[in-house]
Length: 188
Ligand code: AMP
Image 1 (spheres, rainbow, N blue to C red):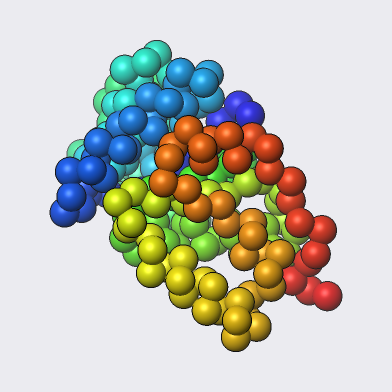
Image 2: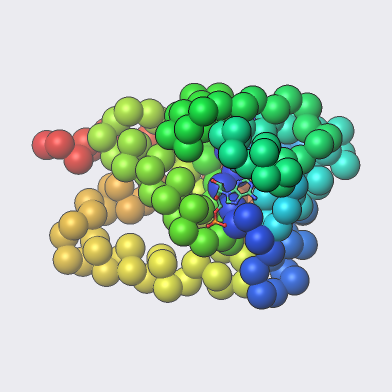
């Protein structure tokens, strides 16, 4: 696994554990020799992931639409910064350059990015692992809702199992490495 795409909040949330874990996860990826692909931000969880990886000499690729560059919220110390025109181009390039996806705590942007790659996985557009780092129980109710959606037969069990949820960054990383994509497509 060469690079992992990290989706997370553009702010740090209301618990210092979130920012702490963002930095720790960035460091862990760098120590494992895995590059980070992310949205390029200098602030919040995004900035902390990048700082963590860069502090351990890791590769960090930021991908951003021009609007965030103009707003002055893009990290200045990245290995590579790719500036694109639209949010859609950004997400497509982030997905293309990455071998797996991990969501850390965040808001609407984070949810949207995570669910997009999951919906692509369930129709077989990619076979890359997708995980959630459940820091301080932040995602507990989302995970409960996903299970509810399985019970109500809107999500197949095999597709629910694609979503690896762990509290430990090390454990999540190991699961990403050993992941095998389900055979069952949403379409049949
Ligand atoms: P959220 O989880 O709602 O905080 O959104 C995080 C996502 O929103 C990021 O991955 C970006 O797509 C976008 N975003 C919002 N603010 C920024 C920012 N200051 N710098 C870069 N991306 C941002």
